[in-house]
Image 1 (cartoon, rainbow, N blue to C red):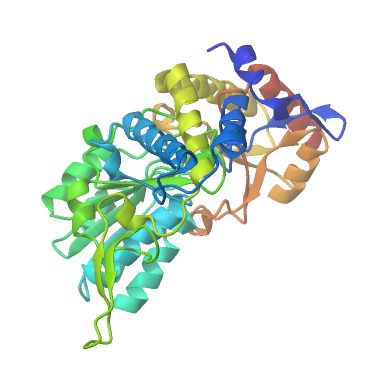
Image 2 (image 1 turned 180 degrees about the vertical axis):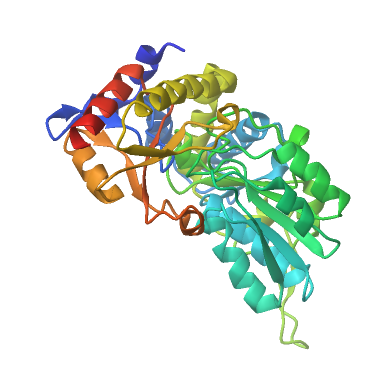
Length: 408
């Protein structure tokens, strides 16, 4: 990839922080936005702003067409069967909540089991725990190895005919470990259970083909893949989504609502997919911005995106290995790791490290990264985290390493 040309598309990379050129290594939290995405959003508000699916006037028709084109782009990006399987939501968190509440309140029975892992982001733990308390479901957690990778033997031992949903992250947001979702899905389907995948750290960084993986649900966020905040996606197999009850009620998601004076309840029929799960006015500009982000990534090629991050990560790990006071927490099978490096410096809290890095214009993450259980298992109070993306360079890593040497 021509990284210099890519960097020219990102206005924020031209700014300075504390008198230093910005080095942005917090991409696992959120990515920066290229001018193509910013322009797409601006164009919508300047020329086409109207609500979608509610009127016959020109602006509404243009807005509706733009949103549906974005839906088609996202469907093609992950190789969904059709665009009706793409539901626009606020992000990965809302997508997981939709599946948890819809299945947990309407389809699952008391003492059915949900299988999660100890490496999950809080967004893939808390919703299932809330719904388990409401519906009397049981939750089991797959163990994690000492290096933060999934314990596949424990995973298989915890599967049973009582298991109804397995919800796992594709890529750990702490260790960068990539789970073998395709093999996991085959095993889970043999038990008749559904597979929900948290793709927040995979869809932006590596090729994801939902039909090849054969997963039932996939959740991901636009803001981690060059798109705007407040927009995300739930992919679901159409046959499964058709059987599910809506997560939220309101405008658009209904087909018909009529009052029955003989009953306390209204007569309500729901709209077809995907509108059944998109109550109220959607984030129209967000979906258009996400469509532009998808186009940008497809132009680069996701194989090239993944390879660029892989090379940067290998380079950074080699440099970090030369620093005696730095401990790195990376999955041992580096061929199955993404561009995420969690680390600590002896004698410093992760927040101290992040503040010192920021004083030199380098943005990294610190804390639990919304994965507190994994940190407890790895016996960490917290960790600092550097995460790379398409616009990062070897020169930036050199600055990062030089600053770490000064800190250490």
